[in-house]
Amino acid sequence: MCIRDSGSVIGGKVALRLDPDLLARLAVHLDVVLVSATNGKTTTTRLIAEALRASGVVVSNALGANMPAGITSALAGGSDARYGVIEVDEKYLAGVARDVEPKAIALLNLSRDQLDRAAETRMLAEKWREGLAGTKAVVIANADDPLVVWAASSSPNVVWVAAGQEWKDDAWSCPSCGGVMQRPGDDWFCGECGFRRPTPSWALSGDYVLDPHGSAWPIHLQLPGRANKANATTSAAVAAAFGVPPQVALERMYQVQAVAGRYDVVTFLERELRLLLAKNPAGWLETFSLIDPPPTPVILGVNARGADGTDTSWLWDVDYTRLAGHPILVIGDRKLDLAVRLEVAGLDFRVCEDVDEAVRMAPPGRIEVIANYTAFQDVRRRVGN
View 1 (tube, rainbow, N blue to C red):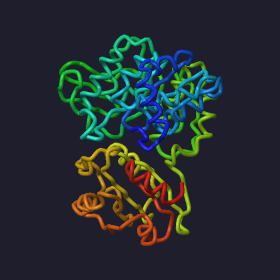
View 2: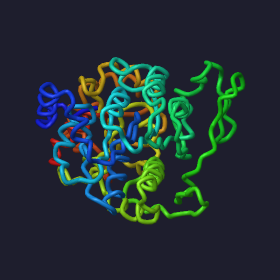
View 3: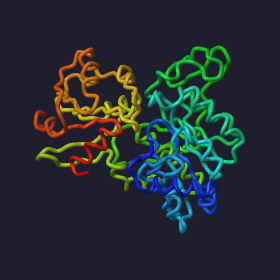
View 4: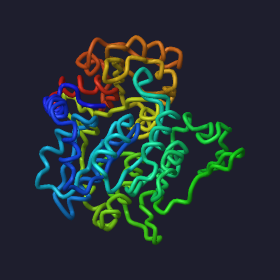
């Protein structure tokens, strides 16, 4: 989602109104990689940008302004750059790819998100499939997500990455024929039409990236969690498409400590808070896997503003029972919606007026703060991050 209060986005809108071809002209001298997904695209964009800086100047929309206006503004500052590393909102991927003629496109995952705004996941995959058919770009795609595989399969040059898929609830029916997907172990296939998981050439294996030659390269990140190791694996595959060796790429990724405030640890009201962004069921599931164990206190924040999506029905898709044993404090515009969900899940929690009250009420220890998009930005502004 685009950062709506950014002046650069407004400038990009005006510029595109005056010159609809501006985005294409700004990208003509760049080797461009586009990154799109429901979750992880901002972090992966940052990791790829850091890796490619090993061989040249990079211009990137690092703060997540990922619609055409924000992308245009970002590229406008890259006259001396060699590479353009661009995060793209899922709905705009095909159009941006048409304009900038990327050398590579990274497709990470597709899951339900912003139900009032975004298309159903199968429809988004259809748009990707149609828009990328015949592309000259190398498509680096997650072999573990059936929707991504179906979308990428229309492309003539695909590099498959075994990046994993913890959230599977949007991929139980075959995107090709509608049949029921079979999922034995890490494999998947449709028993009706034969659509199945492709053989990956890159893979995440524990704390290592396995390259197409079978070499294992250690992952050393300052970012937490399995999901970020998966992001690093895809990023290493992208960097290799631009001639940057895995060892060099992964070493450079260690420099990334936080991404637009995500994973930052801050001090507020004499307490230590770790800030975590989770925007949809798949993102909350990944985030629950990396927080400190009970009795670590957890603040949950949910808004439903335009940038979040106004439909909060997704709260019922999140398995909040994973927070059992944590002291839970609830904030945000839709704190009562979340409170009802937690009540049904049988969890103990306290509804607070704001982050100040939540921090004061929290038991001792570092506090994990998990919030969706605008709630996360509200917390960042309040804690001075």
